[in-house]
Image 1 (cartoon, rainbow, N blue to C red):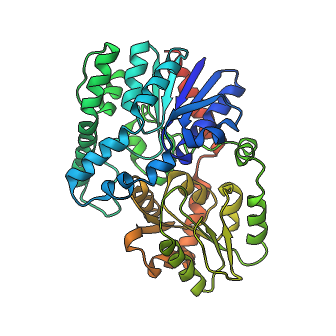
Image 2 (image 1 turned 135 degrees about the vertical axis):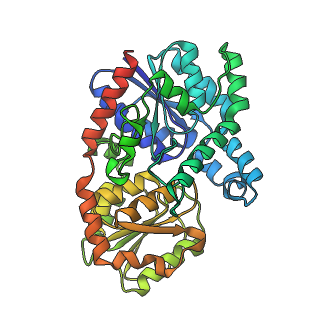
Length: 411
């Protein structure tokens, strides 16, 4: 089979596709990847053929569009900004997706640009399957945000969010479908895929979302978190020894707390305040940031990428932004997470850990020293250790995802 992955977003969006792609290649299938410009070199290190799909995600995340307008208190400003984020690099990505669809049997995307990919796949008569890294479709099991709502209110909010997002895409979708010679469609993508019997792979673990599998059924399988194998992760690190140095420091004394915010753009004051609060509690700390941090004998300052799978099991807890990849790594490590979220799916992960007693969270703008209390709570540590044993092994999750994709490509 010939399978193309076209994935927008950050490294956390791309790595699950690399995990599946490398396994499919081992099985003898032809795999190609297209990713944002700033991630091409990283992804190509996996050994999979890789090309540019869209402009740099890092530049987008640092732009006023994301840092200011997407967080505006004015819903109209936020709605317009959401549409612009969805359309980031649209012309280039549509061209690349079409070129790959011409030589593929199946087109696979991450959460972003799914409507575009579906239309292009339909125009070429090939299969399409999306990967979801968190719950995106309306359901009756989860709250939309970190706070709890009555079930009917939460269900209504999910449907409103789904419809609102579709409205931001509807005009561009109609334009693309006209160019492709396809008739216009009505309603959000999830409803249409459900009617067509298209699977939507949920690349996260059912243990964090009790009831969701029964809510959605087998067409939206929760396969588990997708992680590249050890050799592929080593290739992606490009021989960097930052991980081994960090592990050596972490294991040289009392287990530290890891603090890192991935690709999220936060201020030196924000991460510095968190690090200082942890040091004031007498804890050892690993601060993973490009910002300057104070010199301290209980602080290790990291600036280079590290393998969370190797480092986090040596830590007592983690403070992070709540990205799916970091949340998965901390949960697999069996350690508590305290999530200081900024936007998007991050509050959902904080709420999932809170429900399991394995962590908590707060919006970064409201984050204070007391939010760090779960990191020294024995009950939270015990719950996090239990949750870590409940997760689907990554290799099993990857195998199941591959099987679903190959079945879809054969339809």
